Length: 145
Image 1: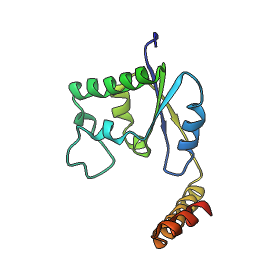
Image 2: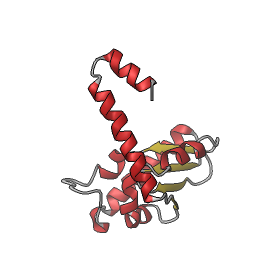
Image 3: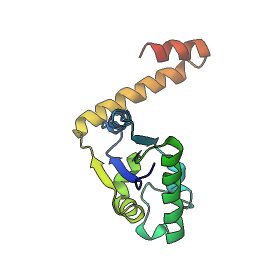
Image 4: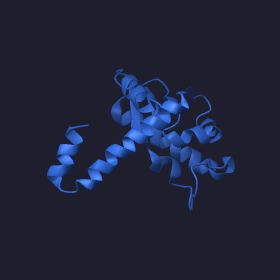
């Protein structure tokens, strides 16, 4: 990896298509993607009670730490471009641009009615998995979805 690392964030509500977009873009040979790296963004923010991180909550030292994690990730994968996707990023755009001023932000907007229907369907799927607590029931439920 010789060029400086480029970073892009995919933001949007849960169940809006952010994951599939990240997976599709991640097929490109120069793109590596973090799948929801909560530990990086919330490592320094203690006693967090919401998904919102106030702009002043991340110091210059923490900003450098986060950048270094992304650089390391890119180097380990041999990628020049790293994608990050967390639903919470929608609330924290000022933090993203503070840490990565040159980052690209891809915002997916899906009809809210479709988002709610998708969430409801997913909750029902997970409920059926929990109701079939035995491994056999879990496997049957998961494979029949």
